[in-house]
Length: 115
Length: 109
Image (spheres, each protein chain N blue to C red):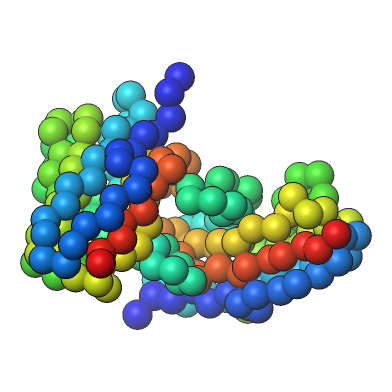
């Protein structure tokens, strides 16, 4: 079946604008994760959703970042008033559940460039 | 604070060389350690290690975990240019993955 998809693949935006990044998880995967990877750095956990439970937002770097998920489907990561330090690749992953966290399937990512 | 440290940060070798990548960790509620290969954007899964001393092997790649000393190594023998990538180590804590910064491997022809 189809893997995790993300859109757009690349996004260039001006500082101060808002952006929305989209993630479509694998059908049937109840857990969804967002990560950020800055150039030359490791993956930074941002947020995860498990079913209809309240998301774990502990990794969000500031209140300019928010994420939503509709049921067990699409998720959007919104960054308001973008800053240059937000430039990174944003990766989404999904798994059958957080008990299967080791079987995360990653999307291709969205490369965000803030000018 | 949970952390995963990888070394070296980058490495350049010639085709045919053998390389060893290192990963040490301090993570509460350790469950497993994972290795990923990242070539463009999305990392691809290589190994999951849960028990000490049991080598996992896939072709020219192998990995082993030492839970007493809190580290793992990833070995690649007879390297090829297609092995050039960032190799990420991640540790599963309580319902969360903690990633290292990765080792950037470049295999020159």
